[in-house]
Structure formats: C-alpha cells, structure tokens
Length: 493
View: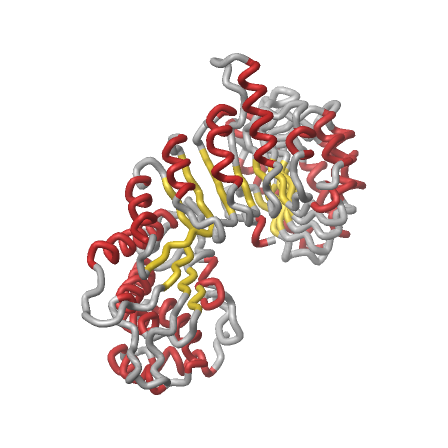
C-alpha cells in the first residue's frame, strides 16, 4: 500500500523537466521521499538534480531506501538499478563542479549543503546477474572512476573551490580491479571527493597488494575487513595483520585458510602464530570473527583468549575443531554473548556432541543464528540435542543442510521447535529417505552430490507444509535452498 503523499510524489515526477524546475519551490521535508521515488522509478534526470541540490548535510542510502511510512518497498534488499546509480554519481559530479557560494549568495540557497554521501548497505548477493542492475563490483568501479576523473579534471569553473564531500562506500577488490581502486584511493587524498571505505572485501589478492590497499584506507571509517580466497597461511597473515590491527574501530574480521605452511620449519610457523595472536590482542572493538577453513584443532583457546572483548558472532566453519575446543568455547566469556554461531563442516556426531551441547546451552539466551551445515548430525544426535536447542528462545535461523537426517527426525524438529516463537527460517537437508542406495553413515559429499527421488521429496515438502499450517506457523520458512540469501549478516542481526 502507498500513501496519498507517495502517489502524489510519483505523479509530480512524471514530467522530469517540470519536476526539476519545481525543486527549489518544494519543502525540504519532501526531498527524502522524492529521492526514493526517483530511485525506484528510474527518474534519472530528477535523481541527478536531487543529489546536486540536496538540502541536508547527509544523503544516506540506508535511510532513504528502506521501508518507510509512505512505501513498504525496501530497495536496500534489491540489487540497485544501474540507471539510478549512475544518476546519483552524475549528480555528485555536478555538485563537485559547483563552486562554493560567496558572501553575496543568498543564505537560504539550498545548494552546496551536502557533506556526506553514504552509499553503504547495498545488496551484495553475488548470485543474480541482471544487466539492468549493479553489483558491488560495479558500484566500486563507478565510484572509483568518479574519484579519478575528479582528480584529473579538477574544477571546471573559476572561483572558490567546491565544498568537499565524503563518499562512504563498501569496496570490493580483486586482482583485476586492484590497480584501478588503488589509484582512486590515492586520488581522493586532498580531493573534494573523499573516498571512505566502511567494509572492505578483497578476493584472491596477493599479500603485497593487500598491504598497499590497507595503508590507503582511513582508520576512522573501516568497520570490516574480509579477506577471501587469498590462502595467505600464517606467514602471509603475520605480514598483513599489523596493518589490519591499526583500525581500532574494526568490528568484523573475516579471514580464511589460516594454517601452517608445510614448506617452512615448524619453529617459524609457531613464531608466526604467536605474532598473529599478539596482533589480535590489539583490537578493542572486535565483535565478529570468521576463521573459515582454518586449521584450529586444539588452538581455539589461544586464539580467543587474546581478544579484549567478547565476540557476538563467531564463524568456525571447517576448522577441524576438537572436543577441547568446544569445551573451552562453552566456558569462555564469548559463549554468553554469541548472537551468531557457525560450526559448519565440523563433525559433531561423536565425542564432539556433548561439548557442543554444552556450548549450545551456554549461548542459548542470546543466540539468534545457528549454522550447522555438514556436521554429520543424524537423527540420534539431533534428538539428543533438541531439549537444549529449543531453549534458544530467540533463535531466528537454523541451518542444518547436508546432515543425514530422516523425515522422522525433521518432523520431530518441526514439532519441538513450535516453542521457538522467533524462529523464521530452517534450512534443512534432503531427508535420507529420499535417496536410493545411500551408504551409512553417508559422507557429506554423497549427500551433496547424489541424486534424490523427486517424487518422494515432493511428498516430504507437502507433509512439512501441512504440519506448519496445522501448528499455525505458515510464516516459518522450511527450505533446502542454501543460496537464497537467508543467512543474516552480523550487522543486520
């Protein structure tokens, strides 16, 4: 449903030239809704002029494109339109080429007020490829081009310099885009357009390039560093981590493939690990740590004991955790603060089950998101854990994909989880009943790759749906879709 104000605003923007002429006459209180409607309907001429004449110090995508009283559509949950994003950047460029008003300018002039353009928070699904929308890689490139062009072109009009604008963005960089982005960051130093990175994700980037990029970032802006597919090892990480540790406001650190290098002596490996731990102790605001696919067997206590504050999100997928690692985590200060926990890929079916149950009990009061993909949990282990799992009263998301569960086990979970009023999403595996000739216990690779009987699974889906309807929980999503953007980011919890 749309309000009358929204419908009137949409009508006003139908004729873009007339709407642009009317902007100076409209109340400034209408500008936020004008921006959302123009962005939504791709009214690029108006959108450009709105950015150029924005009457507030801050223009924030997160504030303007969310669900509002006039329109329930949340544009932040959609890939942004290429046309709309380009119009915003063109408006910013026009703004930068407008000189600062002199003393004779009327004090009520609404131009030149914008100080911060916050473009963070855009959807970054990495899956859908729509030529009419922009990915985060495209957004990074577009903003970078603007920075470089501004530095190379300079002001086009004589007179006072333009008022500087801080552009806050989430940056994505790989080998192909590294040189381009580095030039943009260098160009923004001392430029009217100051590039400020909130979240940095670097993929498959050599160690020296990662360091060079980190050195160019503003220490006061960065909240997340995400290094993916870099396979740094402890040696590479010991070079990079001191450059990361200088970001004192960093709240999220995502590292992967942290393990010893078999090509170097073990003494060097231990020295690198101790140095890495010492640097981890420098973070004062860290709340999320992801160490996916890192060899942490028997070392979790060393890693987590160095941190100054309890974590609220901990991802330890495929880390070969031992029972003592889980026991330590259950007794640590972190357990009572965890909102998100990911133990995917760790075998929880044997001696790890009891320590895992202890950890689950310790984190039950705060846990919102639990990911247990490929943990070798069969019906026996699940049923033994259900009394503790159902104590997680605030749990919203439960991921169980890739576990050897039967239809009977899933139905038991569905019935017992009725007490969890906040539960909204359960990502469950294909029941073992739907496979033909499955070895037991089935390896996770078999569950992920073997074909299923589609007819049997259709009956399973129908039965689960009926059970949800009968229990008054039609709003709870039970799905096997692990690529549906259902897992929440820590900052959205």
